[in-house]
Length: 194
Image (cartoon, rainbow, N blue to C red; front, side, top):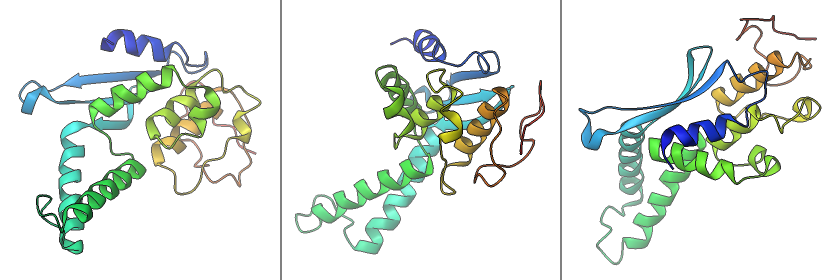
């Protein structure tokens, strides 16, 4: 799907309270290898999180190199090392996913996947991009937002988006909630805390 159509389709799901303040963006760098770029989420013209292909690939290479050296399975062509090497590849991808490090293509794929995902599945997803969009979705209504829990180990961008959504909906969250960091976003309305 063309980027402009994909962006419009996903942003259609945004709650009215965030619609004019949140934007999905994508850019390509024409001087980079194969014109790679990044996708990113912006709130009030502040970049919250970025999914850059070159950064993701660089971190993937470094992590994979370290894991295969530690395990001693450095040659995927060697039959005795092949299984260990591919286990290291799987482990690398799992670690990067948990850290929220994705390529621009994964950003696009996740947005496409979001379009056919129920809100219940989206808020429980292991994919940071899908969970981030779910927090902004109007299908996650005012009554369900206070029940939504974010762990201390969740990505900081997810915590910011959750707090932003609560602020825009004027939802009180207990001060004991693990995500509370007062006054991250103050434009338009004050942050509301108990």
